[in-house]
Image 1 (cartoon, rainbow, N blue to C red):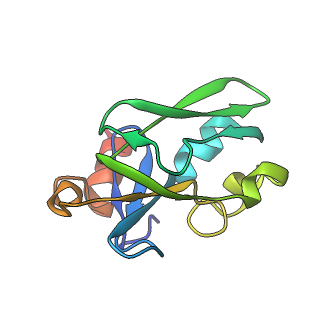
Image 2 (tube, rainbow, N blue to C red):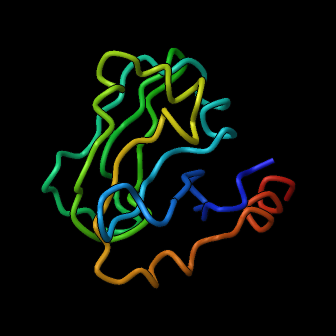
Length: 128
C-alpha cells in the first residue's frame, strides 16, 4: 500500500533517502494525506537555502477544503524544491510519491531518518 523504500512521519509525510541532491533526502506527503486534503490548488514551500527544523512548520498546502501545514521531518538546509508544483500543484494529488514530491533537505546526519516509521508501522497508525 505505501512504498516500502520510504520512511514516514505521524504528520503523513514521507522521506526518501537519498534525494537527488548529494547528501539530501526527498520529502513529500502520503497518498493518505493528499486524499484527506482533497484537490491541492496551491503549494507554499520553503526556499532553497532555508534552514528547517524537524517537527516545525516549513510550508503549506492549500486545497479546496482547507489549508494544511507542512512539517519538516528532518533538520537541515533546503537544497531543492519541486518547481513543477508552482504551475501544477495537483501533481501532489495525482502522483504523491514521485512527480508530486515537495522539497529536499541536506542532512548532515542521516540517522535522523532512521527514527522515522517504516511502511508497516505507518500503516498500523492509520489502522489504529
